[in-house]
Length: 405
Ligand code: AMP
Ligand code: MG
Image 1 (cartoon, rainbow, N blue to C red):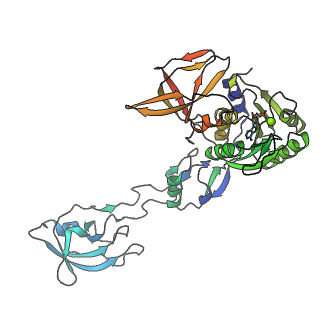
Image 2 (cartoon, rainbow, N blue to C red):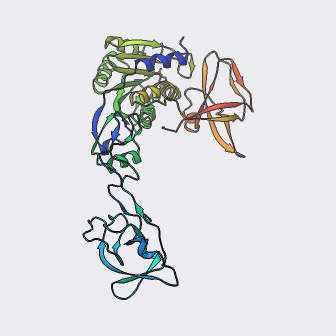
């Protein structure tokens, strides 16, 4: 049986980042930038005022103080969004507002708070100031032709703001992969329906759809397939034609109704492996058809979640063009023994918490792969090698379940 490391390696080798596309700025959130963005302008584009006040000639105010204020004639006004028309001559000033262009002749801005109105059309200034004071210089933030966003950058809100500030309306990005989720099983029914004997509610669609979204991809619901070749064939084929990757859940074990593997062969997929030495999640199939990926996850909800996080999520992040593929982790002290008597690497569901300034982590009491409540109430996974006990007090790496980046 393959180790998790080997399986991950095979998967990641098969991943191709889809070709870059040009997207409108507003659609590029969470995409990875595929090309450097150079600024066509200086930022600020021109010298402007950092405060509300008066644009002045600093030399006029060299002797200003509380006891002997200097009086200046207010000869112009420059609101934001206008261009100054008049020059500031000696012994005069221009009323100015934050962000407005500095008029010619002026070399500093005195804050409104350091002035008071004098007689009609005049102000009294009670502070001297240095040339350049309260002026934001052109190019102070960004200079023309400077690269403001590098290829490979994950575009969050601030990065979109940066691009907009230098007048970009679209960006060349690696688009968010479309990922189909198909759950399988004759017993699986939409939540809220009346159940017949032997039927259960579909929890995997909701969990996997959520995980796909948290991995920054676009989930595509492919529905619930019956355990028949025909239904599986049709739905997986549709998923492969519509999506960059397809995740199936259930039907990959050794029973007579576990038909996903056979159907993948019928559909011309190249099966790269089946079965991994991990718990939960031993029956896991991975295949490709051309550049498309198919992940066949086991149906037990905990197995589906864990195999997604350990094996599928890194592939999806690589498809997005990201370099950091691991779940975020925290080093924590085991608050109880982590016991793995089995012969496979065990991903134990656990709870990470802070106590007395340190991180502690405690395994969930029930680790069965059908125990949905154990993963719903856990917040991390701890890897415990085969036939190993990690004793209480030792440090372990806790992989967070919730962090999406
Ligand atoms: P399978 O991998 O198809 O053999 O399924 C293993 C176990 O997971 C069975 O008990 C299934 O009923 C259960 N299961 C499969 N798919 C789902 C699902 N979508 N939601 C909840 N449980 C499921
Ligand atoms: Mg099944």
